[in-house]
Amino acid sequence: MAMKPRKIAEGLYQPLAEINVTPLVDVMLVLLIIFMVTAPMLATGIKVNLPGARAAQPLEAKDPVIVVVAKYGSVSVGKDQVSREALAATVKDRLGQSNGVVQLRGDREASYGDVVWVMDELAANGVTRIAIVSGVRRSIPAKPPSPTP
Image (tube, rainbow, N blue to C red):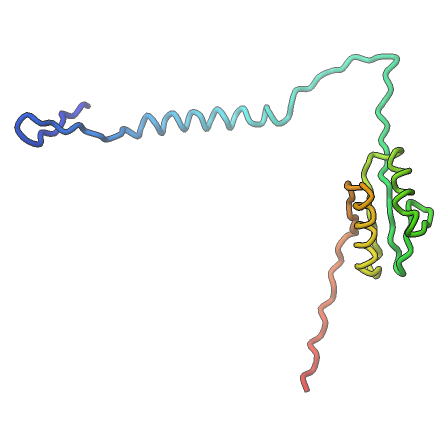
């Protein structure tokens, strides 16, 4: 339904500047449905039945280098205890045989400063892929309120 432009004065017309929103909403709803249908297809990918080859070898899953800071500050790389001076060299040697990630495991009762020192020592020597490993969080019992004097 077309409307005639409004007449302001003799011979002057003001254009009608109203937007019909219904077609805009229809187009947006159609686009929404299209994206909702196609998005799951993009995320899952395509299943392919790969051919076999005699010379193919499976990729080996390399383990990360594990650095452990014990309760009293001793440092181990894997199961071998190392001195603080030899830590960076030992970790760099073992990174060539691993996936390039260093897992840092600090004892719950280890000094925070010892754990930070190990992280800083590794970072200063070019080891930047450090993952801090934690265990399952246990609930800590609430402390009873202290009596006020």
